Length: 476
Image (cartoon, rainbow, N blue to C red):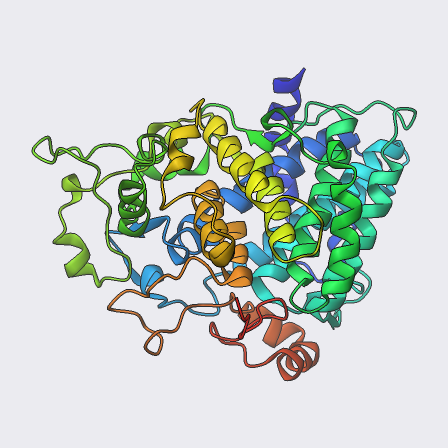
C-alpha cells in the first residue's frame, strides 16, 4: 500500500505544478482538478514535494549545505562563494507556496478528510511556514491564499503563530480521529505525528529564546516534563524514504549526472581531529587510490582554485546518502536531546546538560549505525564543558545535522557556533556570511507594496540582513 500511494503521488506532480505561476487568488481553485481529491493521494504528493524541497537543489545542496560547510563546490562554485541573485531561490518560495501549502489547504478543506488527515496537514503546513520564515524572514502567513497581494507577517509573529498551530494540531491528533492512508513519513502512525508536532514546538521555542527567554523556558519546561511525548528514539525520526529512479533521492539524481560537490574540508578536518567514526559514513575515500585518507574540499574557492584541488583526490559524500532510496531526514532524536541540553545549559530547564549532551551524541552515532560512543565522549576535545557549552553543543549538533542543510543553517545562525570562516573568494565583505535568502524577484513585481513594507520592517533584501531570531550579540 505504501508504494501504491507513492506512485500515485508521482502522477500528481504535473497537476500540482501546472498552476505554479497563477495569481494567489486562483491557486486553490484548479478548474481541472477533482472537486474532492482523495486526501491520501494528496498527502503522499505533499510529502514527496516536501522531501525534494528540503533535500534538493536550491534549498540544500546548492545553498545551505555549502553555507554551513558540510559540502563544498568543485565546479560552478558561485553559490559556495555567495555569488547568488534574487532569482536563485525562487523555486524554494514557489514550491512551498504554490505546491505544498496549496495542497495542504486542500486536504484541510476536503469533505473526504477526517480529523487526523486535517491535523497532519496542519503539522506539515507549520513545518513549511517554519522553513520559509527561517530562510527568508518576514513572509506572507496570515493572509496567505486570502489575497492576491498578501501582507507579510513579521518573523516573530510567524514563529509565535506556529507554536500555537502546532499545539492545536497535536491536540487534534487522536486515536479516534479516523484512520489515515498515504503517509510515507510515519506510515500512518498518528502517535508519531503527535511527537513530531511537539518536537517542532521545541525547535521553535529555542529559536525565540534569545528574544523571549521566559516564553521559551515555559514551553521547553513543559515539553521536558513530558519527554516521551516528543521524538524519543531513532525509531521516531521524521524522514521520507525515496524510491528508485525516477522517484529517487535528489542527491542520487544530482550525482548520477554531475560531479560538482565534495564533502567540505571543514567537516572532514573536524571529524579527523575528533577521531569521529561518523566520517566513514558521511564521506567516501577519494577515488585516487594514492590518497590514503579522507580529504575535504575547501569552501569558497573560485572555479580554477577549486578544480586544482583534484576531483579524484577529494571525498564524495558517503554512499549511504547517494543511494536512490536514501531518506530525506527532517527531524531526529539527536536534535531533541541537544535542544534539551542547550536549554539546561542556559538555565531554561532544571536538567543535567552533560547527560543530555552525551545522550545526543550517542543518538547521532546510533542513527548512523555506530553503536557505542563511550570512548569518543571520553576525549577531552569532545567531553561536555559547562564553561564552553555553546561551542561543544554547537559542534556536535552541527555534525549530527549532516545532510539537513536548511535546519543546520538555521541552528548555526541562531546559536552562533561552530565558528566558521568564509572562503577566500567570497562575494561578500570580509568575514561576512549569508544570513538569509533573497526574496524572489516576482515578489517585487507582483506584490510590491507588501514586499517594500517587509523590507522597511526587516531590513534590506540582502544576504547579510539578520533575521529576528538571529541576534547579533549573543553573549555566549
